[in-house]
Image (cartoon, rainbow, N blue to C red; front, side, top):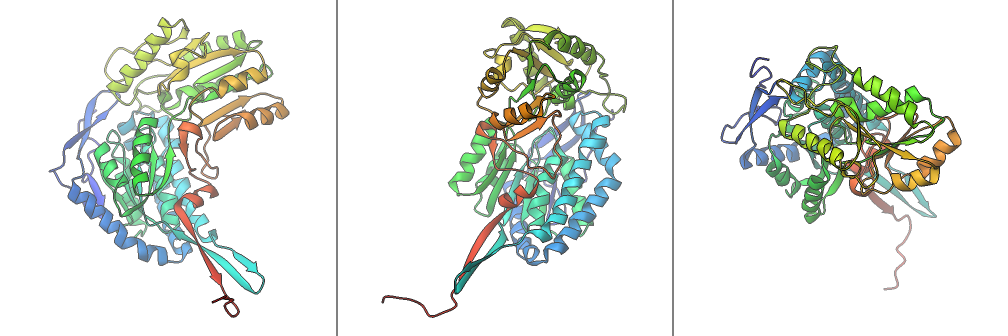
Length: 486
């Protein structure tokens, strides 16, 4: 891999054009597959943050005054351009994240384009209501919030940027977006595409930086709403900062989600769901079903087939489309995951397969499965964020529901069973914001996504997103004389 292969035109995108300021601290962008430096960007200075927020505030008013259908046309044009450039965008995402090109070609820019298209079409349908009050009446207006700050994560950079930008822009807001410092590249391409599609300057700005830049956005008086995708500790900090200014927030945070496999489930489908919920994107997905509860009657057959299918996963160069699993994002993340693996061994979990780092360059960890995991083990309590599956036994429906809910998290959950009455009964009792029955980790943009408990507040995607990027103005209309005792 040639160094600087993915070097962008400049570090930031402000007011419709690329902007550089080398006074900001340099951030090296590392390709996780070989640890080479593929790009270098600079952290946003206070002057650039100010410039971006002023541009957003200036542009937002005229944008909100447009017909919603006109806003929608621009987003749909941007979706078309993203699809036309899907391979190039996917290659950038693979260089930046280390995720296999086999994945990024179908799951990253493509899903971002879906979000732009969906919210572009939804924009004209967002209306108020009329409320009869006898002689008088009232009506409501859906208004944009203003300037929104988006703070992204490193596992799905362009998808997250679109999941935040699409509803924000569709409903008349402006956005200043800070990608993760580990994956800064694709958001710049999104900004470029939006400009080409006709988005007026200032409405989507990209600032690079670490936590300090995110904190500056979350505490600025010009920001009306903060949308974060990240860890629970980061979420607490951003939520606290936003609360100081009584700002709207959406928090999509971590999870330790249960995936429950009853003994009447289709075993191959259940294993496929469990593998998708633990090994896709090298396990670096917040909604992953990392606690796989398998009913005892199915346990041994499940483990046997799971082991065989896991050991058939093809690891290698993520730029090779035959590769099914790539490296972890960073050396630090790799060491964290290896630490959890060693801890699980020490606590008595049975290593079924994997459990080691691959020799050679890059941050590769084998897909790993532990059996005989118990609820009190660290690996069953804490978010690993790597390709590590914990398989736990259970006997009865009531027991597994209680154990599944015994966590501070509540992002997602899954159930595999042929008994549909049981499936619906179980998901009704699971404390999770997003549930799947006989599938896992599918997140079409039409469907609201988000968590409960420590896994977050608010929802992204679907019509639910209207609630989090608009506010209601109520207007009472008096049709007769004012009835006043004075």
